[in-house]
Image (tube, rainbow, N blue to C red):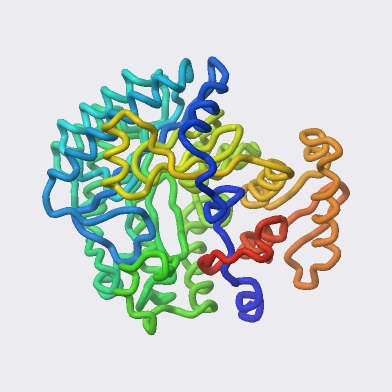
Length: 447
């Protein structure tokens, strides 16, 4: 397996979008976005993503758009701009109904209880949020106190997403993320006692000083908390993009085969604990909506990873937030100061994006289905795309015929990624990426 890891772990996109973010450009602007929003159906289903680009400490492994703040004043100013954008986009989105709402960061858990209540009320005034909408929030256990637990529960939180990374103190010191098992357990118990029905925990492998044995210990501790979902992500070391990652000692990072062993060992813990494997890096208990969607072939993938949320449009709100509409992708201004100025002056905040063209939609569909289902059904492709499906079907057959590593299997009317091939699904999906040839962007390792 070591030779396969070395062969197929080359850097490729994570495929949370297609075309991928390096291909976004400034030709997509506020006027484009306004037109796309106006074209949404009257009863469109909407998923909202709200980005809070602040943390009260900066974890060195982080790949998000965020900054450390020592005072709350910058957060207060930012929330005024976010409210302005919520009002503006809510009016433009018309009669769409919100079926999912996700707060990410940064650390939205650092918001004060009064701001949690005010922002939630503002969102519900600006958008038609359905009573049964999923409401998820990323929580840093170091931020949380009883008042914040109460505020998020009263706001309607239905899922708490908790970052763990690794419980080993040596690893935590190397990534500037101190967080005990007891702290994490307290958060899980606190949200569940307030009626939050779902808990997600994120764990990382490939961290500095992390070992296979250590990954097993952390996975075992995570499983003991019985989260409904677990995301097992490979650490993406991209210091050319995230300068704070230069604080990490590269000599302490495990190599490709060691990363693979950590991932496989942690996955075995979750499987033994009764979790079902979902896509390439998620696990869920059988009752969870993610597991149900996977079993029914309804699993989706977007910038938040795997999701069961089916929607007509994803609306990104806040600095750097990305949205997806039927016509393409849009991304807000990344710099917080620029975002605030534009939002508070009542103008749009779109910085770039990409409109679907040519065979983007079908290739994006093929990549998503491989990432979600590990298979392509040729009759379904033909039913959805007609004659346009023949080119990618031909490519799939060629990939299957050329495979000499046992990663792909051709079946009557389908291509399937084998169990042996599943760890390398990103690399296999990249074979359908028409933009990758000659692409100058730098990506993280596939495994």
